[in-house]
Length: 203
Length: 393
Image (tube, rainbow over the protein chains, first blue to last red):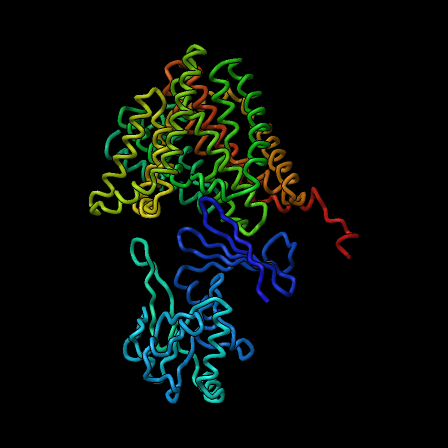
């Protein structure tokens, strides 16, 4: 169930996003132009005063976002969910050692042609690959992140399931905690650079 | 103004600004107060600084930078993105509070150009004070905040037109109309430039080596201010429009970052120097006018915000909050008075009255406005108590 997110410009201040929680409260997140984020929580929708206001600087806000978004550990029930960016989703997919795809290049795997998803990064030791090229290999124990629309994500899931026995895939996903961490950082004047610190694939 | 006097001034500004910050009020009244204390008028015990060419120049520079920053924050894109509240809320506020302003202006100067300037000064609320209040009092998440910000944006655009002709209007009707026409053309061309010239400007500024970046920006700023002045408008409108032209470029944030530290110094000095020329002795002469203008302003702003809110579909308490948030007057009222003080077509008496009135009026509304804004939710709950029946359901 997608949450209905309301975006409002606050001229001279920044942007505000708001949504109602299923428990009857209301959340508003303000992104200040100077990088400060504020989270307002109203216990009841029509409350006059927020019951809680949290103020975070840029680094804290990114860290909070990563933790809440499930970059480290996801609740069991949402294991299949991904980070949704508008129409696109980004998910990371661990590639177990015994996967038949291990050792193949991305071109040979042909994910984009078969399913429409794009592998955007490979997280592996010692060096993560930020802009994954078709000639990059998916080697053992290299979880990956991928992005695509929800339809192509579904095609990818079934394609992936055909390539792996589902037991091996589930086992690896559960047994090994997610250790990928990805964040985009402003890169000087304009442009963003993807920062990957640990293992995984961004698709 | 000697160097030691400047040092003393800056320390006093920083000290009083800090106190204001601690008390949760805007620094603008604190800066004005510093100027008022150190200035040549009452109280004479602390009269240390007399306005000279140096302070005049500082004020002019401060004015130009202040308006440049106000312009940078303003853009047509932002105006259109704020959506439905702008037109209706802005117009309601304009009609109500220009009417209030005209009553005050006519009472002060009779049917004259000075009355028109005074009306504009009474009309325009302070974006700086209100925005600070909205942040400090945790109002950003409230729905009526969108309405308040939209109205403030509308006011900024409306006052840009007045700034255009405030410095040189007031002669014969024909020459005033000519100035108004030039002002409208200047603003129109600048807005068009911000819309269509942003891409080439972007490329130019991107290509520039870093050490010349600041220089070129200052060049554009001072150049447009000078151009506006040569055209018989005011440097204020030139600086404001320089900001507007650059507001749509991708270097806006870099400009803001690089000039940020300057801005506060220049703004502080500008308000301080303006404070120097406030004559508290005029309180005896202008006291009645203030006693008329301040309550009328509180009423007019609250009513305009309230009705704009009700029409926009907000609850009664939300609409009340929106109105109260607009009471504080500040930077634009002072800027208008400063620009008009340089208008040779206004008599000396009118000029000094305008300055004294604007200063004292801002001191009053900024203080009262912030206090009322802080308590507006409490007041709103008393004024519009929740209906118990509907509450129980």
